[in-house]
Image (cartoon, rainbow, N blue to C red; front, top):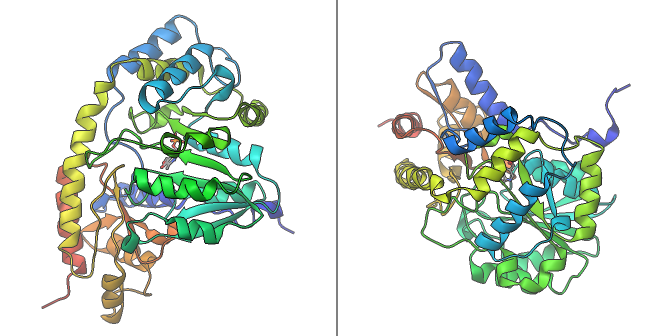
Length: 402
Ligand code: PLP
């Protein structure tokens, strides 16, 4: 008899963390391997943010805080939503959690009932389906590959909606594709959602500040403000301020739902680290130009990786508009490498294994982990030197012998 609840039958460990761990293990064993799996900026947390944490500790602010976050951090978040997104919230509409991941988990637990359906555009951030399933709901995927710029269309959304649909997730800029939904895309999706008042919209704006194509950030509430009463805007400090280890995420939304989410949190983790909350407050209230060098580096690297990957036979890569990932279509290369006996199977997982086993190895994450077979997710949150080597290595391993 299994010791594990039936509810968890379909839940898998995070595949992105698994690749990072495998690459780290091979590296520790002395293997020459370049990791392209990282889901975090390779920059240090800005000093003024660390100083705020040190000051908080020295002042003795090291005790429990209200479960949903300190009043001063909530004020900073309200000011941020107003400043960056033109959105108005009260303190009761804000929840601070242990990372954006917990915000999302709280939302699933607070909103979803057994049998509810959650629409998730694929490729998707790996945790969305598992979180929906942990809440006993059913994920419903909409495929949006490179042919359609990794953005679902309004017609696809319309077709996926059923009377059981309870939530829809939009993640722009996207992990893993780097795609951004335009104002027009969001208007079209909003026009469909407007007709279905039971659907709650989760907009995951985690990569809001990492825009590489010169566009201005917009989310669905900026173009469809009438959806305000059923939209939760998820965000956090992890990516914008290189604060992945501090574990602070936050969201704004309808008071009833936010209160229920806070209840979930109050009985699971209670407040996020008090010290991290003071650091996050400094980050949100501080000089926002601290992000400029990081975003400039991601722009340069994104262009380099996109151009380099497109030179590999059988690989097609879209120019990343945001975040620090590309999601090259490797279907043609996989087919050929498999035919030539290099891959154990005609799959992206076999391609990743092959790339990791080469004497000059690279570690990328298979697209299938993000709900799309035949692709790779490549993170360019690593140095230009590593990226140059990685592209050379992939070229070497994936180019047919003459
Ligand atoms: N949302 C997306 C799309 C992400 O890629 C991530 C992290 O990888 C998160 C949310 C959660 O971030 P964190 O829990 O580190 O704040």
